[in-house]
Length: 395
Ligand code: NAD
Ligand code: MG
Image 1 (tube, rainbow, N blue to C red):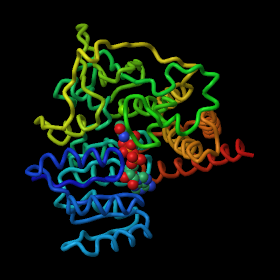
Image 2: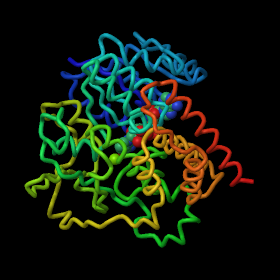
Image 3: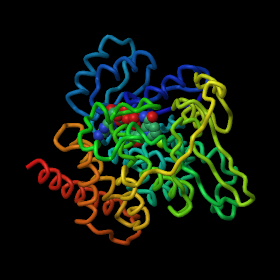
Image 4: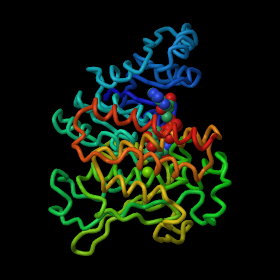
């Protein structure tokens, strides 16, 4: 029996993870569940999965949760505050940690799991974007197994040779073909994007996801963050990564080898597949996903992304090439801008504007960001600068 902590269990990835776990009661035992402030949903999950710990980051919601669970025969211990996240990520009887918190808020707990040598199943891509060096070093030094949950990176992982300690060129890899659905606006006239509402932006044609990543998919910032994520996970550079718009979201990414072979991983767009892959690895376990019906799909299309429609992709490439503090600034500004868009304070096309202006304001320091304090300092400064850009747009 493997003990599991799910960080962000009430979100889209968290719920899918519990769905897969429920199919294998003989393999997995839930030790801890965590959420930001949705006490009702966390209470339901606690009743069903009976964890030893339940963390609510928001203290008021923690009180509500404790009240909701009071009549359970053996209620979980309710912990509160962000520090409790790192605590349950590193518990002795936890073998696997699903890192499914959204945004840089997931950094400390992902890092704690790596430092404690857990199997770290990483959905929280922002942690790698802001602190890739720290997280990769922590995993290496503490023998943590880092398995990507992001569908593209999980696909790439599956298409790479098993001995992944070597660099990509030594393994005969020419490049990574990172697929992208193109989001809801892949065919939109760029002139119309200024009027896009939050409801339109979160309505993804192929995937059902949390609100932040849905907006990131609509701007294609998600693909930009994934380029940086891939650079860290697979020790490569942005030049070796090509973005391929593939509207059916059936191929989840590909690896091209020196001999001309291209290996792809295919499947229905359902996050339970990469989740089950990471939970079962190196074995294969049932995910509850419908088998792929190629006759129903009938065709697969590929095209390059249109730069005029997706300025965020260009900004992410810029940050990936600049390195140092640039990805931290990119991510922080994007988190601020997306939140402001979802609150209807700024428009859809303002997201790229806020990110670019923030990047211009805080030019990249070409440093090796191996200190956590430094990362958090740059993140905080970028958030302040981005908030100022938002305020200027609102005025
Ligand atoms: P979501 O918004 O549905 O869920 C986020 C979870 O994080 C919730 O449980 C919430 O309570 C928790 N949370 C939010 N803010 C928090 C904070 N400040 N402190 C602690 N916990 C907090 O998000 P999601 O779509 O499940 O995405 C989670 C992560 O997985 C993101 O990094 C996303 O990029 C990545 N991801 C998601 C998908 C997907 O299909 N949803 C696919 C690939 C990668
Ligand atoms: Mg993805």
